Length: 428
Image (tube, rainbow, N blue to C red):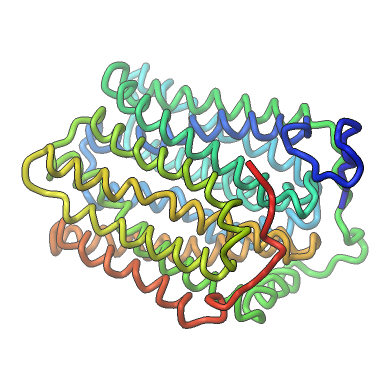
């Protein structure tokens, strides 16, 4: 693993600041732009399918499934290759691939040839690139930062995600309503190009893979090692299980929420964007709370309380009803609890990064991604089937109650007693 030398501006023995780390700043800037663009597509793509192409509940669920299916097929393979290869070239290639795939949507719209089938294909291609990016990215960060800097680095990256959520949802609502969803997706394609440029400009030399080519085992055996690494430890096992449960029911909710907001509550895209932006403000506040809480709370409490508060906030979605102003107010209350998810997710990721050997980083993150990918597909199918049989609102009540099983699993596991000083420290 490459180790960054302290800046000459830092006094001896003083903790370094990531504001003085030029390569991290490049990475941070590129990802901030890319995260903003991704939210545009996340907002615009289901609206494009629902409003422009007249997609129903089943087609919406299928579109969402197309975004995660490659993760089930390629997740373990991605983990092995991320541990075998340098990670930065994989990140650059993934960004370029996503930019090209997304750019085909506005082109087809201009030519009058856009169909729901193309959205499925683009979703699959983008998902393939995202599988490799999402496994390589958290695996690459520990080679760029010292382990004691990871909480600060993950908090800053989470802050960018939150800022992107604030501006992205709001701008997406206006952009979709004024210029149309295809233009919003074109902007996202451009942001992936910007991300690739930022990665190319990083000067820190990435350490070569730990195992030489001749020492590598068969891929199936390396995949099995990753599975055993997660399953053998009770803390990792509990975090993976709770994350899978939360992901399953969260995606069942996600498959239907756009239909619910647009067709049941009759909210305009601009209003939906503002509601989501409130969640971004709350999540941003969470990034400042993480380092502060990490110095005061045990890690187990941060994980358990963070997931519990966030999942309780999800119940506001089906509870939103009545006059539009009242429904919006209830949804805003739920979005204001998004800080809890930031606290949970940053703490969880930092714990995994700091307690995992570099040679296992790729397979750890790939295993978690595949487990949660399987849960995602089940959740999307559950949301689509129940939405069509029981109705959207009744299904939302069921899946929001199901999300509470995640914190129950954490409370019944060694996670609630976890006191890992490795994830403490750092500042924004």
